[in-house]
Amino acid sequence: MLYALARPLLFALEAETAHALTLALADAPLRFGLLRVPRVPPLPLRAMGLEFPNPVGLAAGLDKNAEHVDALAALGFGHIEVGTVTPRPQPGNPRPRLFRLPRARALINRFGFNNVGLDGFMANLARSAWRGILGINIGRNFDTPNERAAEDYAACLERVHARASYVTINVSSPNTSGLRALQDRARLDALLAPLVALRERLADRHGRRVPLALKVAPDLEPDQVRDIADSVRRHGIDALIATNTSLAREGVQGERHAGEAGGLSGAPLRLRATRTLAAFAAALAGEVPLIGAGGILCGADAAEKTAAGASLVQLYTGLVYRGPELVAECVHAIRAASRTAA
Image (cartoon, rainbow, N blue to C red; front, side, top):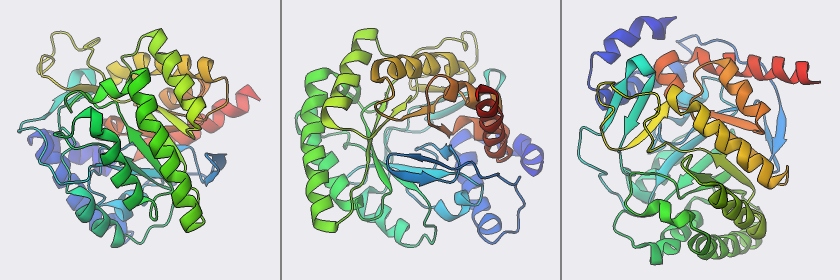
């Protein structure tokens, strides 16, 4: 209710400014319990060898630098994913780089992995008291060629291993030049093989095996889905997140900002992301847990993802348009759908 009252004021601001202000203002009241949010009921499940209190998580990108983990945890998420972090700090693309399309309940962003780098990121995490399930999303620096991308991902994996519940390999952002080419079969194999080998060495060293997830684009052809699924299976990747943002503009034609470069998220992405999710569910046949993301604006959208094969779901743009109440709504809807299916 409070978010509904504040949203017109926030939407009057430039989108990225409003995003930063919302997180900054939320920190104190959420962390110290001064702002009441709808109670999120338990709906425990096991995936990736981890015990989740409920299946609704926060997608990467909202808290890129892991600065607001404690505050966001107060919203009742079953897991929180932070990042994307790269080895070195980078400013990302020039502003403006985040655009609202309110009538379509959508966003377009071209952030470009703006982040404080591993040192700053880990320092922020060291200040967090929350010890729930934390995913850390990793990527390569914008000026690292794909031929050396594995070095960047390996540097990130080694550094975040001790703090992460799981690590997401992001090869699907449309805003870092050439990154999506890492989804091609040969390049993906060349990336995953050394990361899986490093993960096993880290597990031996620290006595703790950290699951690896792969985040993919919604803009994939059927043969690409099959190739990625084969790579995930062959390398023993623990989960697949479907999907990142889209380069397509279905559902936003004629809207102000529809022509801006970047990745589209929100309601218009829902069907495309769910089709991709279902394609991976068919290709992987239950061998790897799937995390559904993209276009979840209400509880029914979350239940749709689980019906399509997702074990977990993640929110981002829906929070911008709906606020914190969306988390509990999605958990309730998934619970109701699972009871109906049973």
